[in-house]
Length: 153
Image (tube, rainbow, N blue to C red; front, top):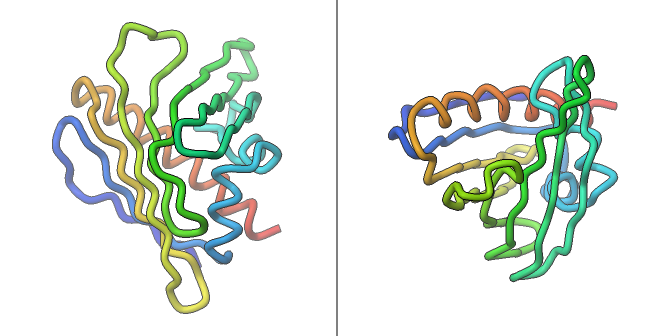
């Protein structure tokens, strides 16, 4: 059973809570292992995971991307890990590669055990405005649907 909760947020932050039928270790790995990232990082049904590069250490960089299948356009995010605590917490910066002049955003993922499942508290902060936040909420909802499906295989 997977639950989704998005709480009201400010214009510059998004908070979502999900529960997955998987251990904290597996959910953490899904965020940090390139082969797993490519399986679920796609914000809609017409996208597929395409890029996953991870240097998992504080100060290490990542690139993760998805490709829009009909057009071939890639959407690639980059960032730097600020905190890495296996298997409970990840904090990293976030920026779209095609928008290098935008300020860095930040994502915090907190994982906890809950009745044989893993509860994920996801916070994405420092959006430039409400439209960006809402667009990301839509994309993350699609990604997390894929992540849920990955754990049901």
